[in-house]
Length: 140
Image 1: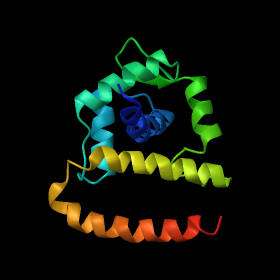
Image 2: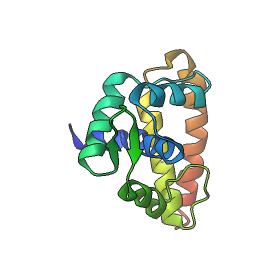
Image 3: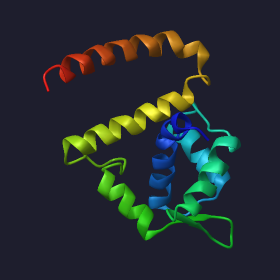
């Protein structure tokens, strides 16, 4: 897996960590929950979720239980808390805010091909946001 792919999948990784922060889930329920949270706009493929789950187990962020569900480890919880990527919580630092933005950008990168009919509207919104971010970056 290339570096660019790993970066794009960062959003998926943090989303899974956040779901498992709330309760133990199996891969199918993780995909169902993501589809529900996006109001049916996007559903990750098994080819994205299951390799990510395996990678997260190898990294010690989650464990697979005997019933097939996944559980967040202390390292997984710590990762969410120290990176500021716990969804629903306001990051406390500029770095945390940037980390959260990066995670959401990764999610958008993962979904770009799934909603082709919505791409023009999304492109317009992204261009407006890009201009705002560019103006902001010039101030730092």
